[in-house]
Amino acid sequence: RVNPPTTLAFVHHYLSLCPQEVIPEPVVCALYDAARFQTEIAMKDYFFVAVNRSTIAIASILNAMEGMPDTFLPDSARHFIIQKIMDITTTHDSFTGSLKTKEKLKRGLTRGFNFEVLLLKYSMNSLSFTPKAMSDVNLPRANMPLICTT
Image 1 (spheres, rainbow, N blue to C red):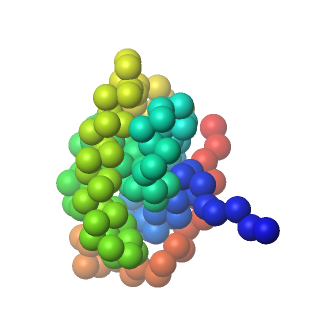
Image 2: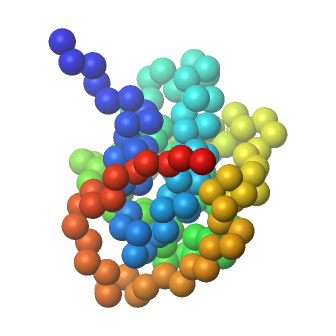
């Protein structure tokens, strides 16, 4: 018997679609940690029992991106991540449901998530980040293994 993918497995899969040329690994790792924190919150709330794991994963990534400072995750990179997720979701309803789930999940963050701690954790305070134009990036699927270590 095989278990279905966990919410965190979906988060990992979605974020692994981001090549380093578009979004540096420390930024992806910070997003991963913020999304992981939210998936743990979702496990404690009965509301999320009926919500698809992939929907919770998308919602947690959207919340994580919203909290990330623009200097580390510019709009072009945010749009890139959203587009990659939309490209692989099977229905538009999954992404639309994520927007509703995102707000419920955000309300569950009682004190908010401190991105400054993550920025320090991944030494991003000295990160010089100039994203390439999206048209200049070769985009093989899942080309980056997501290994976030401190």
